[in-house]
Image (cartoon, rainbow, N blue to C red):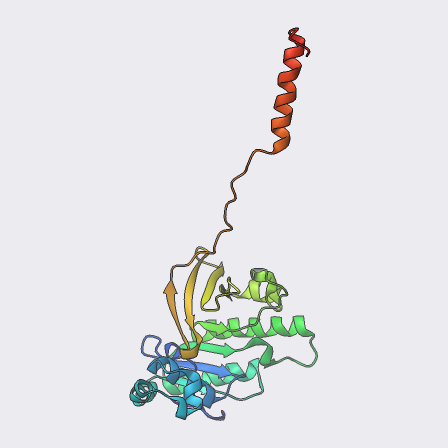
Length: 260
């Protein structure tokens, strides 16, 4: 772990962010502190319940055994973290450039997350979001690295998320090369996460499912399909039988059958 200059306490968000082809990554964490990020990373690396890390007396024997190795593994990841609580997009760009200069190479920039970035005072929210997305787009081209901007969805009810549910969706959809939406499709099973590739500028769209173990901050690919409503066999309504009987009686009378 290498905190960048001028930043707050350093930490690690996820170990994947710090091992992009063996080069450094930069995380602007405007929501969570460095300590919280490090706890989550150790939870994932050591398969330790995140609640137990905050309350060591609850840790089980195998968790105690895996904790030192997880902490040691964490120190090997080249992730620079800035956990300042207030930062503009210009600040994000400046610190990303600084990390790139210090590290010699930068493989990934992550910003967590959109609504925590300070908006320019003279712009409304829509204009401010457009300013942020355009600035990060320029940063990606300048440093020649992928930039991941996390954002919350702005939706009500249980509708499946789409691009229109993104805050400032017009600017995000226009500037982003890829948009990935996360959604829990089953309200009764929070361990299932649906990943939807809603936009990919140079590729196909699609979706897949992950099994989520939030206690240990881990996701694994899984096969899952929504349960279908049971098919109820249709029965012949009674009025159809009555209609058939009436037709038979009518035919009998038309042929001069017995009337008694």
